[in-house]
Amino acid sequence: MYDFAPVAGQPKPDLYADLLDAVRAITHGEPDAVANMANCAALLAEFLPDLNWAGFYRMVDGELVLGPFAGKPACIRIALGQGVCGAAAATGETQLVPDVHAFPGHIACDAASRSELVVPVKRDGAVIAVIDLDSPLLSRFDAEDAAGIEALARLLADRI
Image (cartoon, rainbow, N blue to C red; front, side, top):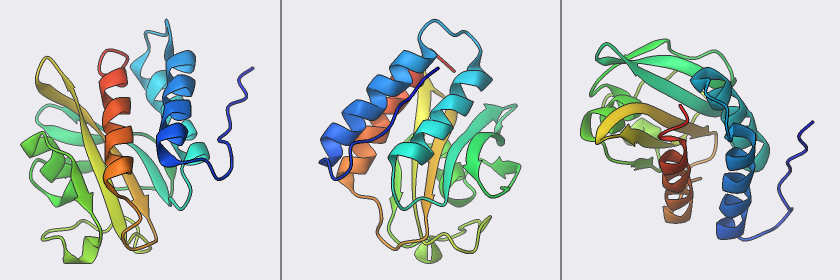
């Protein structure tokens, strides 16, 4: 049995270090990508406060397809370049959006979402998935969050 939990009130760099340790431990030696994404989504929801959605979209035949997540039901397919997730997948760059309603072409899967962080997961230079975090708070995510999730994406690149 795994019992991972964040330490209340710890600085973000420490929180992300603990999250990475938990993901590293739970995915170590497990070859199944879906199982690893599912456990990672659960850990994201457990470790990161003020989220209303945390999970993955996988690159399948040139579009993003919903993967494991924690949160309300979500859009199943997202075209490259569409919305925040599609922008991250198309550009291969992290998308840090303080106000999703100001993002051109935002896809509102959950009307409660106000800010979003999407980080591409790359293998051999190609985007294979994105990690998507949504919050009901404006400006929930910052550069420390982006750096933490980018480190997670690098860890998961050969585990999903």
